[in-house]
Image 1: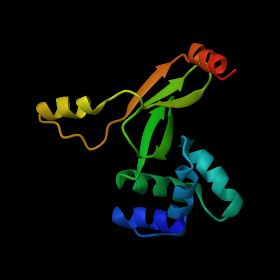
Image 2: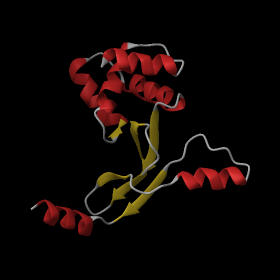
Image 3: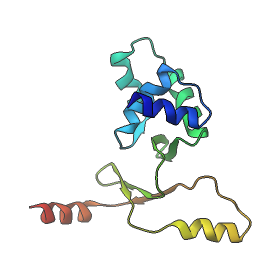
Image 4: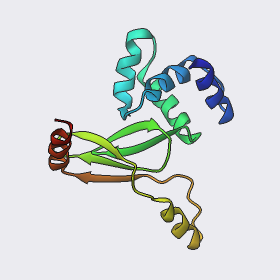
Length: 141
């Protein structure tokens, strides 16, 4: 995995550093993480790492196009950049879920028709999900 992560950094024009590798290792597992969560997890294995180093690294990885960042309730969340999807923040369960089964490529096309060439697109829906979660629990029972 280290070689793969190092190649990702190099392909985006970034130097391979221990901090970048450590942060990518956490995010590569999948899911959504705040900077604080990443910092707290890294502090266990790298006690000398600072919160500012974590945020500076997250910003450089986001600017390079490796990570996706979005804000909910004043907290910035980070995830590995992958296919276009909707991040749904479930207010009632305090979870973030990804909705991937909707084709959103038409948004890029519509924006391009207007002369807007989109580099990244973040869609965040704020919702109540308890009904969805109950249906999923019934389906798995």
